[in-house]
Length: 256
Ligand code: NAP
Image (cartoon, rainbow, N blue to C red):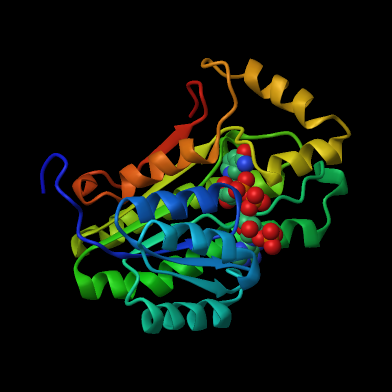
């Protein structure tokens, strides 16, 4: 496959695809020619993303599942196989924050963040890789974060996102021989409901928080879901088969 030749259409699963970065990724992969399973906690919340994908002529299905729940993930992937076909692109985007400094961090804050961000990435990767192996082709793209480098009040999230990086590199080593690549995108500040909720929690306006974030960039703006979707699209591309085990910081400044 060369230049602008069309890619082979695939089935992609995008976790946390109802809104924010996940919705941006789902739409971009549909524009790249793929059919999309939009997986999120609430199937109704996926309706807008599904409609946007169908509008550009691709098939889409909303799938309700908690990525941290082993049985739910197994069921969801088998449902996707029935509805769209075997998923050979997996985008592990679902994530949550429960920010507290270490003295105030409860076991529940720790476990819930590790379970969604890290365990969820493991479970969805494990359930989809068998379909990729059968196809002799696959792409796994995981969402890490600049927080993996350390971030105030985010020991749980930083550990999970650093864990995602180790998991990604190991998946690359284990699965490369089957035509499967595994890479991670590590965003900086992206304008979504997640960052708006952080502003609310720390008691500053979202505009003020965005101004602070802009000062930490070289490019003088905050990121948008499309910035991340573009990086994910590159890793998922058929022509990116020699790129694996990489962590790409997409943060408007040098990171990592
Ligand atoms: P978001 O706006 O909060 O969207 C996350 C989506 O994931 C929501 O639809 C959420 O559903 C869903 N979700 C949460 N827990 C889930 C679970 N257990 N199973 C399935 N779906 C679940 O977040 P975002 O800003 O788009 O972030 C997307 C990813 O990028 C996350 O992994 C995040 O850690 C990472 N990231 C974001 C930023 C940023 O600045 N925004 C920076 C670095 C990394 P509900 O709405 O029902 O909770």
